[in-house]
Image (cartoon, rainbow, N blue to C red; front, top):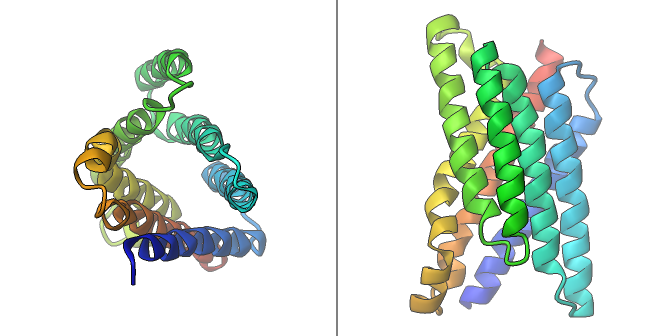
Length: 209
């Protein structure tokens, strides 16, 4: 099996698990604001993946732009998720400032799209750790596994902790490990699969609540 075919298989698996998670969410009646935000992100992901596949079929070169659109949706949706869940006026002011700065900064780099992915990874990895720290002080350990937001946060943590170094070193990997790039980059899609599984389990827990 060639590296390209392997990478493609893992990428399709990531799209499949995202679509499956979205389908599970459609069957649930949830009231939590953070689940609505994740549902919205899954919806945008599904649209972007569909457009990506469509343009690949047409052999057009719009795929990078589609990826940037998703990363901006990711930035806004996850920002407001953490803005809601991280308690405290001071923290909210800090996060709001970061959103303004990140949006302006990312717009400067939007032509190349080289900035938004590592920025998102750094920002939301930090926020996920902050949320873990908040729970350590407030939520009993025996209750945490039944907490839907724990699985959402864990999916975000796993995804961005895996991808931060990949996003920062993408150009280096392409230049120095071209033949192995598909295998190395498959780590990103494997982490996306793990994230989708965590998200799916959070929605599955809705009926048990």
